[in-house]
Amino acid sequence: MEQATPFDYRYRFIFADNVRKIRRFKELSQEELAHRANISRVYIGEVERGGRNVTLDVMERIAAALDIPLEQLLKENLTQIGQ
Image 1 (spheres, rainbow, N blue to C red):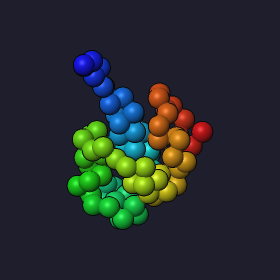
Image 2: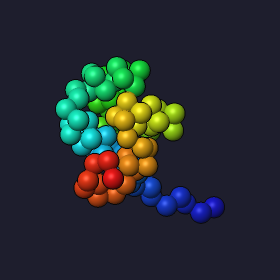
Image 3: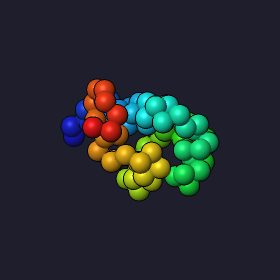
Image 4: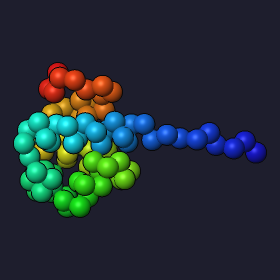
């Protein structure tokens, strides 16, 4: 039986970094973002640290709460927010 190759969770951390960057750019607290996305502030903190395996449904809610297309939150090397 073949062993699974190590998985680095790259997109989990890309998503986490982009959520944090965009939230700060928009001057939102974790609490305000959580309220807008209808999830807990603790959960947002865990997402931003890359500690959560976020479902697509939650990703969509966070993107909507940040008023940004979901695909922006999955871009590597996000330099210009909103493009």
